[in-house]
Amino acid sequence: MWIEAVSKLTPEIHEALSRLLPQLNPKLAVPDRVRLDRLVEDPDVVLLVARDGGRIVGTTTVIVYTTRYGSRRGWTRSSSTRPRAAREWAKLLSRREAAHRLYERLGFEVRDSDVFRIVLE
Image (cartoon, rainbow, N blue to C red; front, side, top):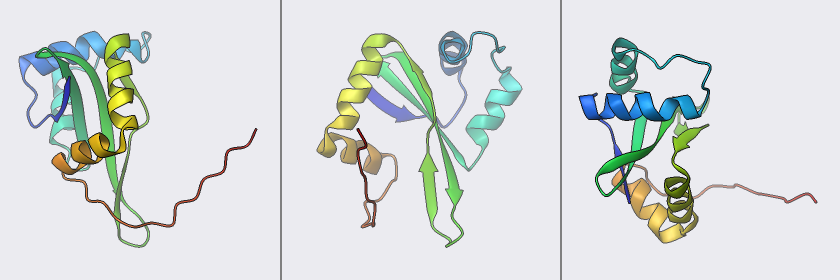
């Protein structure tokens, strides 16, 4: 399985989004081609797809924004995948080195930060 950024809305990408997006909310209509084109062309959005054996089995959107300090950040809120792809995606991202390679391939840079975490029982 591999993950790639989408640079152009092709019939294959459109078909995959039509198949996968209803997993997030089956009550919403799949966006039409015009809206999906706008998503892919938005400079503040990165659409990622996961492929397994060449077939698109998952998707997520990374939203890029500028903080009040002028730095650029990205976040993703939800994704849609087949169960096997979700497990593979989670395994990939849980392995620090593999995740770093993926993010660097997509243009992310490693940086030092003062991020702290606490687990509350």
